[in-house]
Length: 264
Image (cartoon, rainbow, N blue to C red; front, side, top):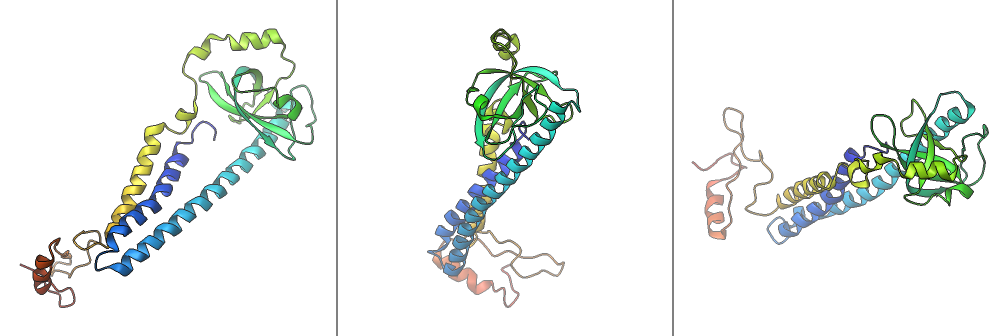
């Protein structure tokens, strides 16, 4: 969950720009002869944007609750000795206060009640570095600032769960900070979302899709294919692309979907 957010980022960028694309395309359709269609598409764009905003809030909160529940379950197993955890060096990435959540520290079998702080850190695990999260007491969490070295133990079956080893002394923390593996490639905010290019492609795809739908209501733009009369073989004849009013009048006299005729 913490190390692969690419799909969620692409979907969010697509939804964010889809509504804007619809509204942008509808603006060009409104001055034409399809005023009603342009207004409808503009309204659909507004609804789509509002739906994206609500969806982001709902999905984010659900993911946050699921992650916290996983951390609580995995941390309980670690501190109780139910699983064999692995000690690893780590550095703090960010932290956030969580109300009414248990906190865990290695060496204490019982979780601490009250306010806790979720600490996200980059751990130098075997194989490859990855991001993990730990629920720590607020008194300890306020000391764990971004970039600070921290000793963690990792759950063997839950890759996102860790517990802080508060017994680590200054010498141990200095060794963590000086670990040569920090010079190698480690996860970043950009890499876990799939890179800037992936998000930009998702946004461009949403804007383009919405704009095409919006421009479908503008005269002379072929956006709704398959709306013409059917040929004898079952295929459809699309209306001709017209941009000039005189040509439009001429073609209208030759093309009539209601009559089922099409220009030669």
